[in-house]
Image (cartoon, rainbow, N blue to C red; front, side, top):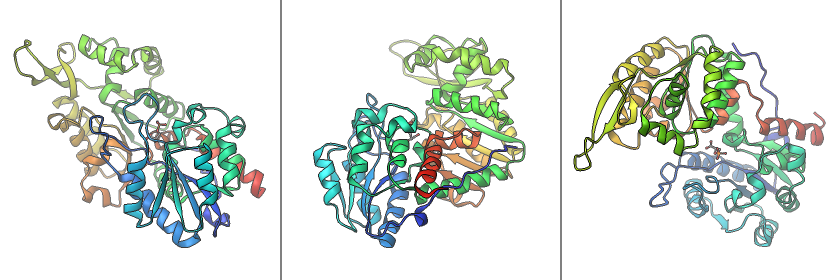
Length: 419
Ligand code: 3PG
């Protein structure tokens, strides 16, 4: 059982927002189709839109919104016009968009915004300071934080999903303005606190997908705080741990790990295994093979020691083992798919893990991302399930790591409210 306490943070009712000019950091970072550049899943936008509407109805502020989308150099690093349109559609409000972040155009737009109006800035990570991590005191000195703070009266952090980033819009602004967390942030903290307080063993984490480096950090914290009884792995994360165990996963798969910058992390994974981290790895996989250049691709189930072809999903036997472990679990946290779910034929492993979780008697927390696109509305609305908007932030919070956004908000409360 985890022992840390949930901090008390200022919420909207602690700020006097009526008709004030407010900068609210949201997280509408969403999956983007790399070919078409279109938004693939707008859940985060829908949820934020609903709360933005409530805030406007209740406080009538001049509301400036800021979010990131992707990271410079990644395919999903885009501007936010589409996001503005969807925020408007789902909130029923008119949402202005400015193709600028901290330049004179954005600052003028912010200063001239009237009560009841909503403005979305362009992707905050277009400003170079926003992609550098640093302590709150240093981030409060950035031009980024100082310019935004000069144009508004209050800061609200509603970006729980970015709470693990120590960037100026997350940790710098709370030191410059009276601040509070927003409703999405508050709701997430409430649900996660429930998961923590209900945390009786076995607590099973199912971790997969491509964000391996972040997941490794999460596992390190889970192990340090003894917060997980079993960690079932899939996706590239499973392949990293198999390599760390000395298993031959085949040249094609090693190449994929190399292309994703994962190979240097093998020693860190090995160190975790040596410390007795409760990590389960697959015993078989579904692979995609091509006998010759001319032949068509086909799939087959292969066992460890016999892997040839590109790994696309966990295998039949692994799915069975994972199902059994999940049915016994009291708390289940799911993050990331087991295989390449973008292709219909490789969704089965992930679906079986989801089904077994829903059949368990435990509380199920789905931490953001691609998994939610595979959930039926019946699962989503079940009282035993919480679908979190925050992916790695959620996992780090559950694993007991102090999140920079929370620490900065505590500092802010001390500075501005004397808490
Ligand atoms: C997420 O989707 O996990 C958050 O939006 C944070 O994104 P980042 O990993 O690019 O900081």
